[in-house]
Image (cartoon, rainbow, N blue to C red; front, side, top):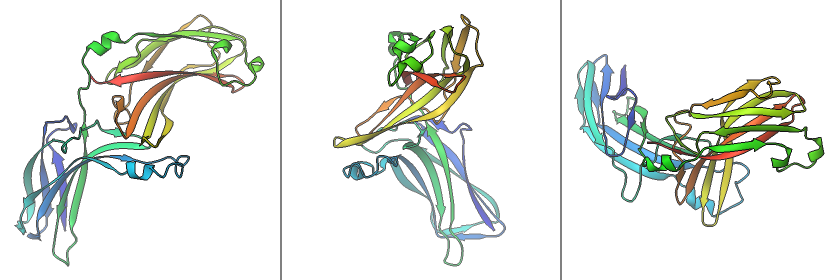
Length: 298
């Protein structure tokens, strides 16, 4: 019985472009282990896929939706030979350099766009024995912005009332209400929380809930056309029940790792983020105010 494992020196597995990814390959076996060679492959790619509603709309997509390989190379760790019984550790170091004319985008796990990096180790064995394989993901993060951008960002004050709503067929059915508030900034450091405040100034109907929703907007495509899909990442309830009028309610949301990344725009895809303030009335009618935001990493 033989097992293969890969361990990285960095516990958090976070690297940036230009770093050296170091670790060990651990082979454990009950007896001497014959093998036909051990190889290590570093792979990083952007995979794009269309949502069900977009499939078939654009034939041109199928060319632009091939995976975009950002980094891909293999190293021979060991030539064919024999490993002794017990535990063998083989150290490795690989530089994190992209392919020519490519950029290592940040790790991102979305619905229609995924940016993932992995290290895979393969041990080839003779015909009668099963090949061994182990793959682990590591995370790429990049400092993307200078601090000047933070100074340019402004607070976003907002007022939600029947007059500000769009996409409503019968405004007469909407209860009279006025909700005021602000988000502290439109440009947000991904490692810091989104903050702000909200106040129900007046409302004729009873309120059931007030929520803050983080939405990813993923755009895949090319010059011939593109598919844009908005999906929810997380939803946080900031008020429950018919809240007191004139009471300041704090807004506080931490951006989840992997499911968010700095706002990104390339020739083939875009990743944007938005915040929705959602007010649900007692009769389950709801109103939503939408705010595009820009995420950066300082």
